Image 1: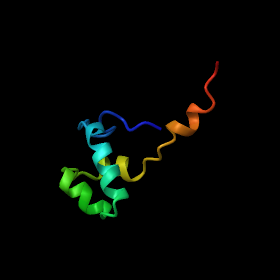
Image 2: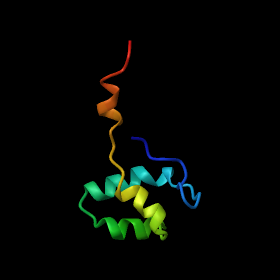
Image 3: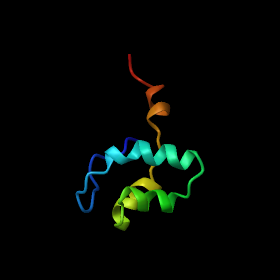
Length: 65
């Protein structure tokens, strides 16, 4: 839903890189090259970005009043 502040496995702060990653991939850059340039070398951190599904907008529709 929301990208975590830190990697679950190693504890590296990763949330500040999410928007840059998302924009560059939407522009057509290769995800592997973007992750390398952002400094995400460990597979645990890379998995957070590659496996993340942004559902916050869909879930917000069902907000309780």
